[in-house]
Image (cartoon, rainbow, N blue to C red; front, side, top):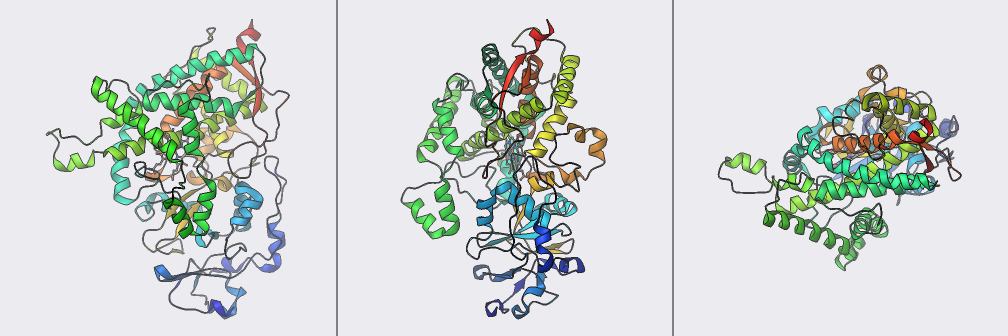
Length: 560
Ligand code: HEM
């Protein structure tokens, strides 16, 4: 291990403690075994190799080296008990843990590694050659997301968007992010959501009609596909005042390009990760992460909508997202002082970028939660009945097929809310979060070097058996007010945490509740011939391998 001899500055990750020495190669096999079979995911045994290996990672550009290792594995490397360390499962020098990710899938690999380090506050993970620290300790997560947010305010720059969409909230940094976020935030205030709610209600109503046809013809429906359509229509309408009718025309231009945007060029993405200079060359010769065609399409759609509103004097009257961000466009009012004008203004590119983010961030997230919630309720009729009893009680019986609750109507649907929360615990659309450490800092005895990426493994925390009894089972009662009170506040965070959490959370929740309440008020969702349960997740994305198939039965007809 000569290559591990100490050169330059050792930057390390956590100070060695008794507990940090606890995991030895000898007991690695028993640590890597899953204790209980998991009905929702495939069983997995990620590694039979010893748990601990020594890695030296040179980051010469930044002037520091990082070791993520066990201290006892490599006496030659010169680490002492003062060296700062973090444990990591064995990994390939070139690909890091990427190969384990490919082999076992992003869900199993996350829970498996997480369960290997039960007694640790943090552990290590290599994103190819880049070391990252994965947080396990909930108090540490809280401090990073909230108390020390200023030092962990940015995400990694994994995907680069091309202009004019490169100034979106998901990817911008520091003061730029702060200004855009504070300017866009009022768009999601209660008053404005109430106005946007009309668009959601209208789409939910149209959706009801389509569902009635499906129910009458006894058709089996794949929930993700159906929910994607209604979500796309809702986005086009709440975002841009457009009526794209994906329900009846799923291959419309808007949906086609939105999907192309959402499924970027994975090949180029991987090449850029492994061989960054090759990624740059391919990019320069015209290969883009996101197709130029779709990028141009959205630029034109948004520009045209902005222009049309300015010319027709309709700006401010349509109550969609575009309308609301237009208000924040840079303008010379002559009223505001210079400082507040700068604070409350967005450039033209910033508006285009936020408009696009509205599609990117709100499509797959909302449609997945809708689909998984309905599917889980179909598999748990007792809970579905409780939701329906609550709807009948709070919204009244409805014998008209297309009645849809409004903004006020869905505010107090507490049991529905519990079911949605339990679904997002099991199937969170964002399976992990990341932050980057701005300045070196030591928190809870863990040292975070400047520039170190930090991962918050949401999926694994949401399924941690030490936090959740029977973690793979659907039990909405976990989200009763008393049960929530008894738990660590950071054991559940499907919308992220702290000032950089999901800005669209309340809009997303509104969409979920209006669509679910209007459906479950009229229909029983039941299993069908094609239903496969337990759900098997695909390797790379939050999607059921066999689809989420159900049938609808009319509640009104049953009651007659
Ligand atoms: C069920 C629905 C949704 C879920 C589960 C969800 C989840 C998330 C998560 C986990 C993050 C990262 C938060 C963090 O890093 O702490 C995020 C960020 C974000 N989400 Fe959502 N999201 C949802 C719906 C929406 C909708 C409808 C919009 C539409 C505007 C939206 C816009 C955003 C934006 C712009 C960010 C970046 C915020 C920033 O960096 O300041 N999301 N979302």
